[in-house]
Length: 312
Ligand SMILES: [Mg+2]
Image (cartoon, rainbow, N blue to C red):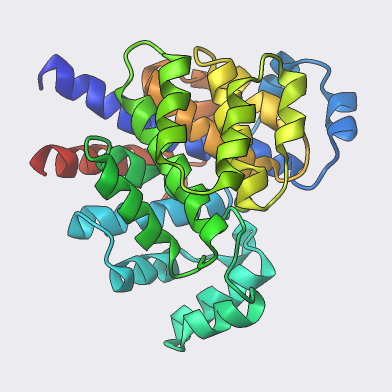
């Protein structure tokens, strides 16, 4: 293995482990208020030190595993393969929302899942469910940003048809791709590339605001909600605020309360893609679940995805 291969593998692994660790820690505080979390944990250090036993990821990581498996199988998104992977991984107890469960149940039964999605989300879902799982696409297509954008769209369609749900996934995938490619974090260049790609005035406004964030307290105004528009730019801003600290990137979004698992999953994926697995907090990574699709499996997926990437 060359040094370049080793760095690549480290970044891919960092992204998947970062996603899972952020999701698992954030999952302990989902739907809590910022005040309640702050009252228990006055500092980021205390929050990061909190888990003493295995930490278990939620639907975010479970669906990202599905995206990863589908990419490894076909080298690109094929909807049928992707849906099969979602179903094979699906455990309702991992925190899937009610609408997502209905869509996945339909997929599992071979029913028209798009019709079920339309019934639960008229006009298409604009939640962050497509963005929370999209990171592997950012890794695999990091050298072809047009293809990355299109593949992120295709990966959203089974569950998210609203333009703001799709664009959230596209923006996050692009951010992951950029993070995985940067040697030294270039804040201005990072936001310029995201702004140049984004299509809607809604995301443009959010990313312009994200680019101006100077302190953790300012992250709150970007949102902590389940809508992609009110969470994707928050995770991006948190990473960009503290690019050299995974712990800070996930803590600062968990401290916002609300959709803490997805916020920290997205911030963790970005941070891990930039820092690499070797710079993630070893104790937290070590606590990540040792289930059949736990830490070791995520490492294996990252290695396989990097092989697919190199064969493209
Ligand atoms: Mg979740």
